[in-house]
Image 1 (cartoon, rainbow, N blue to C red):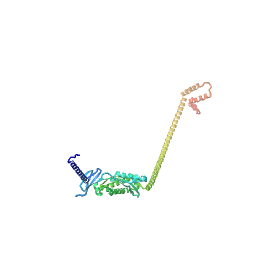
Image 2: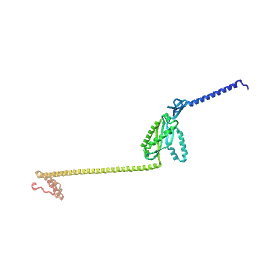
Image 3: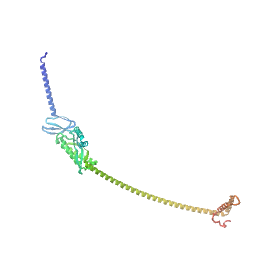
Image 4: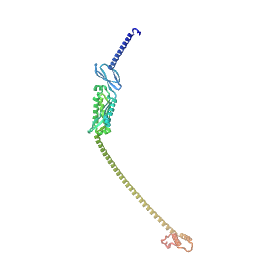
Length: 380
C-alpha cells in the first residue's frame, strides 16, 4: 500500500488540535457553569427574593425585596427565596373523621389519600395540623376545624426575624394562630356555637386580632374560616336533651299565650254579642213603642173619623126628616109610595112584600126599624 509522506503527522496534529479544543471548551464550560451558579440567582414568578451578603463592607440581609428575574450576585452573596402565593394553614380533623368512619379496613387508603393530597398542595405553602380544642367559657370543650389563609408581604422582615426556609411557620405562624383563635373563640359558651350571629362575630374578632399580629411580623392575613365544629358525644346528648326541654317549655309558653289570646277573643266576642243583643232589644223596644204610638194615633184618628161620620150621618138623617115634614116633602113621600105599589104584582101583598113595603116607607120618612115614629104633630 502506498502512503503519502506526512499524512500520519498531519493526522496526529489534527487529533491533538481537536483534543486541545475540546479540553479548552470543557474548561470554558466549567468556568461558565461555576460562574453562573456562583454569581447568578434566579427568582421564580411566584417567589420573593432576599439577598444575603457574607463578605464586604456591609454584610447581612439587604433591605430590599427582589421580584421575579435572573440576578448577578458576587462572591459571598446568596439569594434566598420565599413563596409569594397564599399559604394555607389547616387545623382539621378531616383525617381523623375519615379514619373513624372508614374503619381499619380502609385506614391504608385514607392515609394514602391525605399524604398524596399534601404532596400535591405543597408542604411549603400548605400545612395541616390537628384541630383546635377550644375550652369554652362555661367549662365545656369544642373541637374546631379552622383554616387560615395568609401570605408573606414583607420578605425582608420575615428573613430578619425568622431566617430562611419555612422556619417562620413553626416559630411564629402556628403559635400565633392557635393563641389568637383559642383566646377569641374561648370567650363564647358552648351553646353560642349554634348562634350564627355570635359565632360569626367571634370569627371576625379573631381574624382582626390575627391580622394585626401577622402584619407586625411582615405577613398579611387574607381570611380566617371556621369550617366545622363538634362537641364531645356526652355533651352532645346532654345539649340535645336540654334543647328539647327548652323547646318544650317554649312550646308550652306559646300555647298558654295562644290560649290567653283565645280567651280574650271569646270575652270580646261575648261582650260584642251582649252589646248587639242589648242594641237589638233597644231597637225592638223603640220599634214597638213607635208601632204602639202609631196604632194609638190610628185608633184615635179612626174614632174621630167614625164620630164625625156618625155625626154627619145623623145630621143628614135629621135634615132629610125635616125636609120630608115640609110641604114639598109630602109630595115626595106620596110619589115614592106610589112607586112602591108599582112593585106589587097583585092586590094582595105577601108578608115579605108587606115587610119590604113597611121598611121602605120607614126609610122614606127617615125612621129606622125599632125606632120611634115621628111625632103626630109633625105629619099633616
